[in-house]
Length: 136
Image (cartoon, rainbow, N blue to C red; front, side, top):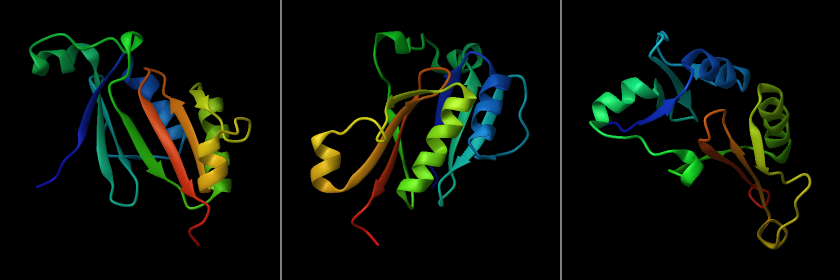
């Protein structure tokens, strides 16, 4: 059995450009209703559906991310430098950095040796970039 995620987006083409700009691998051929990407070494699949199409299968409303968060995916990185490169790509692609480890020094980062970035994609979906600096 396999699991994947289905998220709603306003503009499939814009989403495709964003995630390709970050270096993620396309999963299949995009259409005007869906683009799909593979994330991580295990190639976790996230389908990004045009909101109207996703709403059909929900048979109900899709929550507005302006009212809160739905989920936050965590992507592990091999190094602090890998995260810093991704941060630059996210900013260039139009994403929003919510927590920037290059600027924000929180106790969690300082005491436990984790290097963490939280970013928001163009539709408000949250991702956490994570690296354990103590693991070599």
